[in-house]
Length: 166
Image 1 (cartoon, one colour):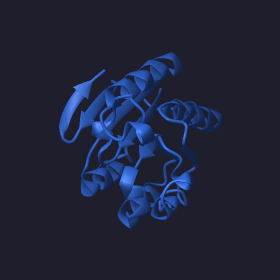
Image 2 (tube, rainbow, N blue to C red):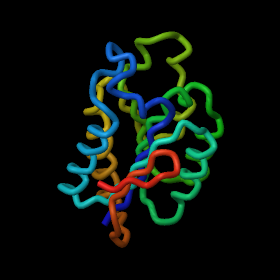
Image 3 (cartoon, rainbow, N blue to C red):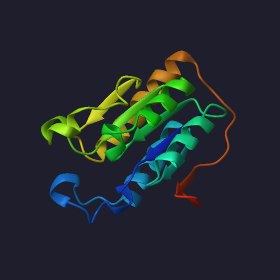
């Protein structure tokens, strides 16, 4: 069974009540639930985590080297500032898909640059919560074509350091 890490960056825990005209009304819990549902249909194990801390995201990326076949990441504001996240993704050398709810290329100039895109397999931007589902399907197809498999365990979700299961 494929095992994928899903990382949500800073402020995404506020979805549903934060700048709804830009990010929509879906909560992070709703996005995670839809990802969990699709992962069950595909037979993929997901480990879903959210953090507002750059160092914690970097640590989770580094730890993904053992036991995961790919990463779906919405680095949020760190997209435009974090060489550390970019370097961690490059170092682990796992296929990754960068996701953004809003179209970062139609927003402020400073949001139009992504440090992550240069090391990601692909980027999905501007399709709202559907972008996460497309990332999961795309990464699944990519890894299935390569024949990547790993022992199954559980689907879990973490916000900060506290685990949450789906």
